[in-house]
Amino acid sequence: MPTPRAGGWRYVYVGTQPLKLSDVVATGPENVWAIGWHKGTVNLLTYDGRGWRSVASPLPPTRSNEDVLLGASGPRDVWLLHTGANGTMVFRWDGQQWRAGVGLAFPVLSVKVVSAKDVWAVGGRLIWHWDGQRWDGSPLPATANHDVPVSDPQVLTGRQEPMTDDSPLPATASALDVSGSSVWAVGFRENGPGIAGEQLTQPAAMRWNGRSWRTTKTPIYTYPTTPPEAGASLDKVVAVDEDHAWALGEYSWNHGEGGWEPKEPPPYLLHWDGRAWTERKSAALRPYCCDHLIGDGAGGVVIGGDTLDDTWHVTSSGVTTRIPRMRASPDTYAGIRALAHIPGTRTIMAIGTLKIADQDHPAIAIREPAPPGED
Image 1 (spheres, rainbow, N blue to C red):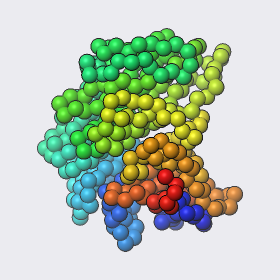
Image 2 (cartoon, one colour):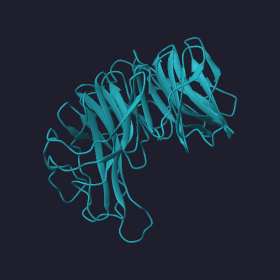
Image 3 (cartoon, helix red, strand yellow):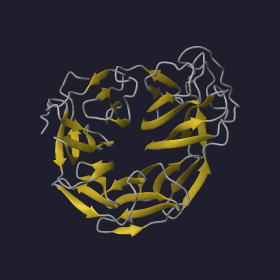
């Protein structure tokens, strides 16, 4: 078993059953839920402050757990969503049992449960809001409005293009987050500034202003010579408060098409300060590095790669430190599938697979507040 280091990760659950964990949600130190899957059956793990136990899932057999999502606002309001060929099934846990909820005829890629009467779900070009009685859907968004800032874009290298405040920017979103009245959805757009030739997409960040969705200006990423089928997008977002948010994205292209290809760039980390998005440089960002982004409970974020050996803490001021690695034998693999912040604390939880001597175990680890001096 890996040995923890101060300020680093330590395992709080290592199972013996052959489950593949995929998603986790927490509403406090005594209410955590995680999704597991094995041979078509979805199983759930829950923690109540005393220990982990298994809870039967209401879902029918599934081919994988990739399309199963969790959301929760409390121990009596846990949501389980499964997207299939005919739309998205919704089930709700009331503290004692699962009950079927009102489903959607569309796929859901990300969900955020604020309360039983305030739920947001996003999938591609549409976003839905649950008010306790019904889902209301809207496109994301129809156009960029006049409150979009106008300034020169940031670029990888090469050309710069001005962003006008009346460019139509219909967008596709894959992630969302909510903090108070601040709701963000991020993804990509397929027209407007920075879209030309082989450059097919640019990052998109959209904000709910209480009445409608507005596009905010994000950096434009290009190369002097555009690689084939190039695209830039935002894949993760963390809403801190009204004036602060973080987003993580990447620039990619169709590799192996022949001809010139640029050096693989690192992902980009953006910060919203209440007025504009700016890129934050970080030692955590390297090519092929970063799949996970979660808030740290103090205005910063934790960035994670494929394993617990590759996780980083970025403070609210942008200071980056590597989270200490656990001591482990060379044949140990500590994989990450999802991260969650435990509200009311500065504890981060990671779920995934602990592989020891070719044996896979479903595993859950936590990273507690760093010692004084790290931040």
